[in-house]
Image (cartoon, rainbow, N blue to C red; front, side):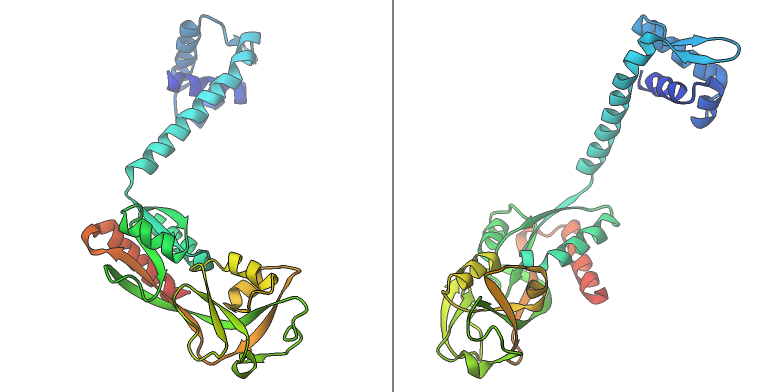
Amino acid sequence: MLREIHCFTRVAERLSFSKAAVDLGMSQPAMSQAVTRLERAAGVQLFERTARQVRLTAAGKALLPYAAQVIDSAGAFTAEAARLARPTIHLAYPPLVGTLAARIARRLAGRAVGVELRAAGRSAAARALADGEVSAAILATPAPAQFVTAARFHVTVDHLAVPAGHRLESSAKVTAGELGGQVLLTPGTRPWAGLPGRSRLVADDDFGAALDLVAAGAGLLPIPQLLARTIRRDDVRFVPLDAGDLRITYALAWSKERVTPELMALVQAVQDALWTR
């Protein structure tokens, strides 16, 4: 019946059995027979046919929107079935590297592997990975010892978030020596190596919450340039930071007990994305 409904909508669009038949790669008699079968099944006449023209009847006009819905639903069913049938990887990632995660997903789509992305901080991502809720996670290193890691990459930290009105906000560039006596917000258990000042731990990879603390005057936050470019807040200022080789290192992590061909395809996609960026 779906084929007959499709024929009906095409004839209604073209108001021509011959043109509709050409569109669908059918003969005109086959098109006419399909519409006739639908009319018999529905118990109504859909078209008024003359030698010169084809017009929708009142019943045809009333039923046309429903026919379009049937075709749309059938297409959605087919697409969703295809999505569910293909192997899927669940990847947790910190929001900071969302651009990379999206690039990885696009690469895997070209290899017929689906990707479900889950933005999560380090602690939440590690728990999801340990519980088997995700297939792999991009984690700031060092990753928990029970996970296998590969495809390491670095994000340079070269800006400092300070509250609006802070004495450093007008600096052309803040040096490490100027941070003495300052409270530095530190992600998780990874102190900023080589920086003076006192550390205050904040949630892993949750730069949004850390910036709220900056705005409240609770401390200063070293951040990557990527965040400084994309985040706009009236209560926080971003100043270039010259603190040597300051960076956050990330790696793709997974459980050695859950290795699949799709996971290996993910590892390759991450390596390719890093190589071509």
